[in-house]
Amino acid sequence: MTLSDSRYSLEDVERTLRKHEKRLLAHPNVIYLAIGEKIRFGNGKTRLAIRVCVSKKMERGCQGAVPTRLRAINPDGSLADYFIPTDVEEKPLTLQALGIKGADVIDGSTRGSVGFVFRGNGGNNYILTNAHVALAINEEANGQPLFDSQNQQIGTIFRATPLLSTPGHIHSVDAAVAIPSVQTEPFMIADNPSPIVGYGEKDDFTRVFGRNFFYHRQNGARLIFQAPNWVATPRNVNVEGHMLIFINFFELTLVQGPSLPQGGDSGSVIVSDTGNGLIVHGLLFAGSGNIIGVMAISDVFSALGSVG
Image (tube, rainbow, N blue to C red; front, side, top):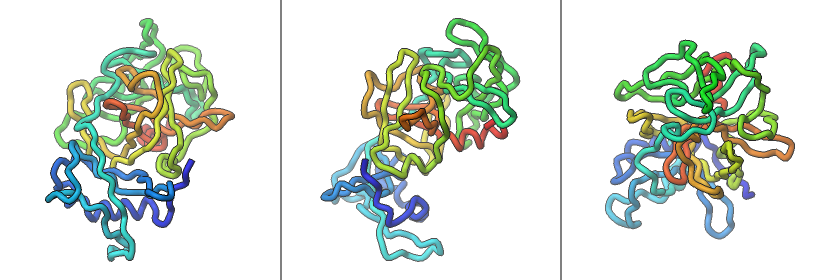
């Protein structure tokens, strides 16, 4: 595991990205901007970089090519005496919500997975999943029943983040919680007996390069991911045929697993293993090929209000 070069912070990179955002997005083929690790040749260390995500790469030196580095911006808006590197990556034009087909655990508006059962601030147990799994687009949480794949009701929807088809509406979280109507154990992933021992911080995704993040399917298959990028500008996600806009989430890349992420995986929690239990870092909601979209668990609980 290689520690990131820490001569500048995530805040320094984001400030520089915002300064150059319009110019970078105007380059040919650019879809969105992100922040992630870039390996430095020669010493194996990594450095935070502005990831310029494109539908197709251009040859370096061609007119319109993305610069290899950008002058950093100080907190007061002045030019800094160092540069932030850029890294151009080819990415799919859109992500697809992975609750559209297939079913591991629950049936709601679409089919997907129970992330895990957790104990809320009031001492009650809740089931966590995605809003697009539990409800339809533009539907509000109002005590709707939640069923498992055997058509047994396992709970009622208590709260959900709104998913709106309004043009231009920006989403940052896709999550729902249900009050269980069956016996549950808190801090337990529905498809994995390993105990949950805590929650991760948002910057865990960018703090250490090489960390393994993973989720389990009901059949026991483990999919392992690395190289998270924080999506800093709007990104299209296809949810039930609606092209919704999301921002402020992470994309991770599959490095090991029996198959690619697939329909029915929405609602899975992304975890890391401490050796004594699992740390919950995020909630999966979308993907494309070997890429998944994940919302930081701190953002999920913040958006859901006082249940976390």
